[in-house]
Amino acid sequence: MSEKVKTELSAEIIGSDTFLITILIAILISFLIVILFMPGAIRMLREKGMIGIDVHKPDRPEVPKGGGFIVLFAIVSGLLVAMGITTFQAQAEIREGLLAALVSILMAGMIGLLDDTFDFKNRTKVALPLIASIPMIVVSVGTPTMTIPFIGTINFGVFYALLIVPLMMTFIVDSTNMYGGMNGLEAGLGMINASAIVLYVIISPIISGQVMTTALIDSGTVAASLLGASIAFLVFNRYPAKVLPGDVGRLPIGAAIASALILGNMDRLAIIMYMPFLINFLLYLAYRIYVKRNNIDYVKFASPREDGTLEVVGPFTMYWILPYLSKRVTEKRNVLFLMLLQAVIAFGAIALLLFGLPFELTLF
Image (cartoon, rainbow, N blue to C red; front, side):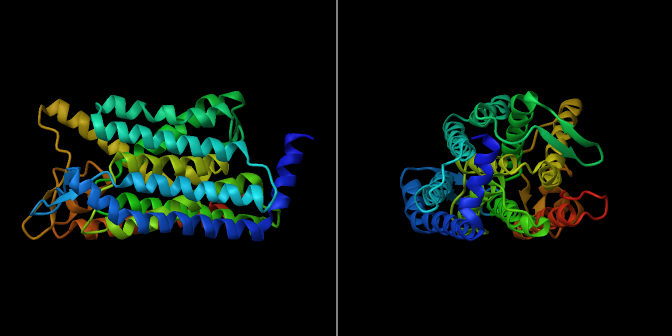
């Protein structure tokens, strides 16, 4: 039996009803794990002295850091339960892509834990997430044909697995790690991006009138596991944060999003969805050049004023732009603005791709 026939048969066996139930269960399992185990993790982190300074508040409170390991366990658990439902209830084979995504997320978590422990140099931080892409490369997930906005359809052949997949995953993991540092920002952006992918997976077969493909099922399963964990973590990480995620939490969020986008062959959605993250990265590079040329100190965080508003040295990151333009922006207001911006971009991208407006970027 050919691989294509196996894929079509697997998708038919699972069915849309079973898939929706699986999605809901994955969300519920990952949500409950964070809700149930995070309070104990917060106490343990505080007792062990795993404390970080919440720098964007005038009183600079001490907050337990590294709580993202519970998020990692929640994502993995939700994904494993979803895979179990596929195996035992739907009597379908576990796809290699899901297993690759699982291993990549775990590897990203291990890399994040090492970074939290040893505080690697920036160059090492950027390069290490490349290791997490190896499982995705080995099983050659995704399709080599990509449709790039304003360019067209390109078949990358073997270079898709060897070049595009590792670059895409590394960029998403790194940019997710960089686009954080304020209460609720990482969890909020992860929640929005994951929910956008789940919505895309559910709606696209309805719009096309076609049977849901295995690629979409796998993508939705990974995104659903992240969605539940992100929503629950936001309960503890929103302003004022009771716990900080650390790299052990941020890197798996990026790996899960990257895996879902690659598994679902959502190259166009990925390009649009991650434009703010790309802009944030480019602004960071511009700031590094600016600091070096002017021989001044590099400033990593905004400075809180006595009234809680933020003071920044310039518009050198996405989360510095609004405080740079206005002196009335607090950390909470800034995060809400960035989440709203990401929601407009992510869900706007879905409308653009599914309904083909206005640049004929149709799904089909």
